[in-house]
Length: 531
Image (cartoon, rainbow, N blue to C red; front, side, top):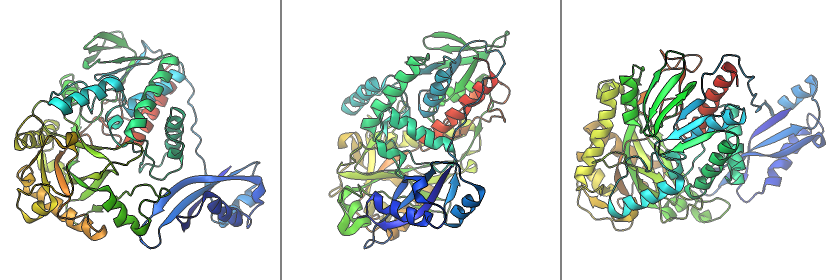
């Protein structure tokens, strides 16, 4: 039996043994601590009071023997909560599978779906329109140097999905025992050991790339196939009950298909609607990236403790819902702003940082909620809303994927023209940025919310609203603008052999939650079909 003791708080100078000692003392009220194995389960930094920075830990106590009901009751009274993180593998079903499972999309949802299916003997075929991690990195370097965009092989498309070129954040709001499983498997494939312990775990894009390669190799060794540079162009049901997928590299006949296409596959959304699949628009967010000096953010949050290796580099997470809703998203300490375009004539920004998080700047998105009524409520209008902002940013930057930028001081005052001084842009290495009026891109309600958010967050974090901080636009790919409805069996409406999955289908929001959704879909396929 496992038990969690939450909220153990000590100064950040304490070591893990100090937290475990507290848990053992509490356990003495109920049982013999020697009958349990104790370890740190989760660990976070509490920097709300600069002069009293603390670690807050959850300690896991695992019994070495069966715990009686009476002792379990005493353990609960001592402050421990029973915890079960076991993920039960489903038993194979009996329905005949008329072909191998096809998984469309090589991001977290597709990878973990393929991994589970492969390890259970289902020999899945995984396809992705983009290239390998190495090919993607080369394509992005070429894009940064000469402005030539590869629309199939970029920040968004390819092995590992969009998360491969990010901070590799594994934070999630969902509560599912599969989250622990995902973290443990990622560690098995090369993620740092602390991803299973930190409350805000991250891998770093430099390490994540090798993790993806190792995970792909495991899928192959377990009987799966992976075809990169293979875009899905059509999918339809055959008279014998199987499916045919038309791809850029030929036809694939499959028994079922998992659509884990990610949040940027706009042409795939259009194709699916043309094939008769049901898609619906949903709310999403748009905004800008804000950059500060990393040392300023560290000092603002940690004070004199800034730079202490035990704390790492500082992170923040803010939201303000007094208006339509504005929040920070995907905060990258010591990172850079990257170019996430997938279409000609559009500028898209995102954030990325390596494992060390030791770059000069820290950045995050500041995003404003966009409701269905803001764009008309249908899928085509939702995509057009994003695309129009990206094209406006492209034009404002002067073309060639140069990004418009503006100091926070100018943005808040309604002026523009000030060249960045203290904070230098990191987008595309800083070489493709142009001072401009970002408010000219957005509807007035977005601009107003961005300004209100910056001021609001500045009250919580000294210097957040500094005049020298830098804004770069536009951030439009925070989440998918559409959802592909699915029933209780996780299949698409009107086609019980197609499984919408992950962030692109509207059922996840980040690496961990997407991976969990991929696992859930794999479990449904296993429980339904014979091997």
